[in-house]
Image 1 (cartoon, helix red, strand yellow):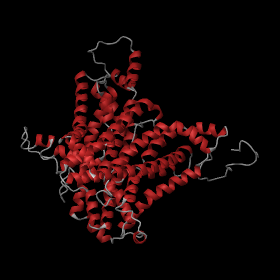
Image 2: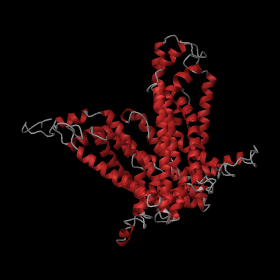
Image 3: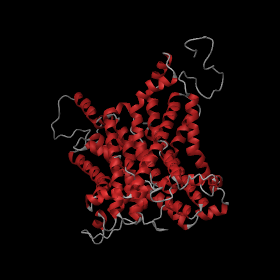
Image 4: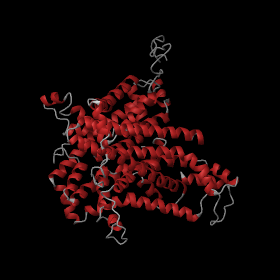
Length: 299
Length: 299
């Protein structure tokens, strides 16, 4: 972006001013470097330092202790549960995201912007409240609580509750990425396919999916990072039973509160690596397929 | 909209006179996708949220008032909203600087800096929480530096105080302002700056009177996103907050405490109070937004 703009700018003024001269549309050198310094210092202090600390603390007692943390049964169970929850929640929200963006971007109907507002709703609700609503709905004190108990269906303080809470919290991610993308692409491709005799499904798989695949991947990436890392909502709904209803973030909390810092940071380092991989893939997608992602980068 | 083949008089989408719910389209799947979207949205988001409101209003009005006027509740709400406000302001200042530096300057490590901005989205909140807590604890890297025992003899306490809460919320809110201001700044026409310069404005005047007003809507949006996220934040805050009632207890934590005391109605009332205050503040922010659009022109 920056490079392109400068080159356009430069080509309009062929005689280049000397290097030390400040153009009226740029800042003085020392201001430029002061601003860069402020930005870099802020990001180092606020963002990078905590990340570095996670790995330093994880390896503080040596690699042996680090790898031993993962042989613990409850740690393995927590990792498995986190993977399971993400494996259910992400595809569910993926199907929803595609359906929602199809109907929002391809058609005009009454109440469309209201529907978009409702889809965004989970973003403006505290994770704690997102978890709590399921306790109210399915808990022992709720209207259907006794019914669930009679049939031995466990939702609250069990795995289904954790999955539901994760689905709630990650609900808008993929839809929010796809809706602006499909809106900006317009209906032309699909209309052409239909008019050439393709069925709806053929149009979807052969025209729409190739058009939106990178946006889809982008949304899945962000959705997955949140699904694996969700803490507040899951914390309300989990029974905090070791080896059974603890996801990785909850396991970290327990270890940390037991002053087992090496163990807590070892599990945390796995999630930090997940975050770094997510950022790397996200940056690669933006760099390589920026035109095929939504117009602006928003979350 | 006739069928491409077959009986030409058969209308696939009969054109109805007067009011219709959706504009006609050749692309199939409207009923399916809208039906799926609304059903899934209702099951996962709307019905559980309705349960929240139903639960809260099982309490008689005087008890709701009593609960909301309890000093502990008031303090928790004040702390949550106050610290979120301060954190979002800090995010605005540094967010604009970071966005400016990323768009306008070229320097080594810029792409890396750009990628790291999104770290708070990708890093699970519990990981951020234990990392920040360890960093700012009296024996942590930064905590020690600013403590009475440190080389600076400042005697500051950050972790386990309201200051710690603000630090955690600053961490969480970094990307919002940057990512809303950045695209606007990228599309900013530099001709306007040149015009200002030719009319005799110095660089400072150009920035404060030409560029910043145009960025204002994006800044306000970024502020409100960061603020809304911070108000509900739980995972990154509870580790660094002292969680003492009437001192460093945030509203989401109070909700969890109420739930653990089996006071679901009380928890719902506080949750709804939080939602209402957030909603009101966002409404005010939208009004300011509308005013600034009229004042400075639409962007």
